[in-house]
Image (cartoon, rainbow, N blue to C red; front, side, top):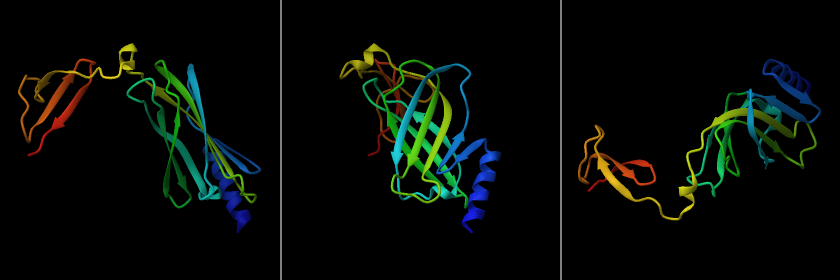
Amino acid sequence: MKNLKLLIIMLFSIISLSVFSQDTLTINGNNCMMVEGTSITQLQNCNYDFDAVDSAWLMYVTLPNSPTGNMAMYWEFVDTTGTPTEFVTYDYPVITDGCYQFTLTVYCGTDTVGINTVVVHDAHAVWVSWGLDELSINNEVPIKITDLMGRKCEPSYSKILLYHYSNGKVKQIIKIN
């Protein structure tokens, strides 16, 4: 049964452009034509069944509201039964727009049988939305309120309103009695 499992994993590895080597499964996703930068993160997880990995990829990246926070990378692993598992890792934020190569290594140092490490390489376009103004502590001052059609209005209840701030942010807010 174990040999059949390894055969299935190795067969899928060839189909998904992955590489299987001893105790490590490497999954190669998208690549950047022109790489702006890289982010390499590691996560130890001994509760995940690495032998059942079918596919994995970077779902999306969220940037912090300011350059002093961390960006979050949301990864999805799908096992051979089709069950998805999400992993979240954090790294320093990128500083310029562009295509970045992301690498996640999930491992279990105490597992000595079968696959105990999965390495996922994937690319993602990132657009930085802050500048020097975001480094100040309180720069969010409301400058106008509009309805969804863009007409200026006063704050009211049970209605979606757009609050425009001095730092360029726009928030949708609904106040309920």
